[in-house]
Image (cartoon, rainbow, N blue to C red; front, top):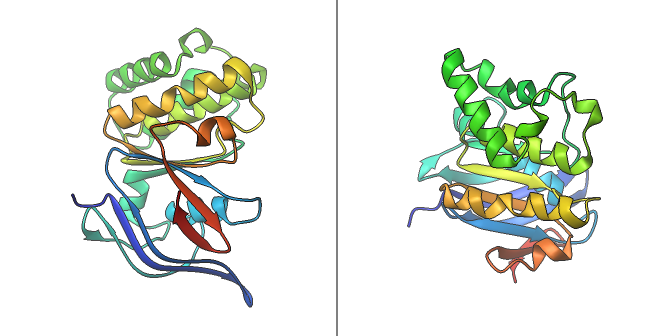
Length: 217
């Protein structure tokens, strides 16, 4: 199987301090991973590097066997990898308009856009919030909307940064339930988390980031 993403020799330095020193890092197609590790280990920094938002030294990298450069100008990164922040920004519009935001720039027809937004809201369980302003939403609702906003762009890899942080009970369960559906659609998911409920899910491949290196668990 050709890896979805394969990276060799990734280093991230801050002055004389080396935060990340990862020899090899591989993500397979239609697979889910959880990246655990102590606060300050560099989990968020790694996700930002993989999305092109943070520079790093990388010896070589390939996406489905095609050489790729990790920069904000990479076509592959723009089209195939989406990063969802721990505290996603909600635009001051309705839920439906938030989810549609990324598609507007792609020039698709209104009929196709409306159909995609409708399907995405149903997938995320937020159809009933369609016309709500985002300033009235709970943390769990915002997280599901942010993931739906990422998924509607049809990336091959979603990077989720602490998606269940500060959520509990039903709100956490609703977010967690979205993850296997992404894999069934053929997408890969890399989740940075220290949430024990998420880390212990049986269908996630475990990774640990500590002292700059990644180990499989």
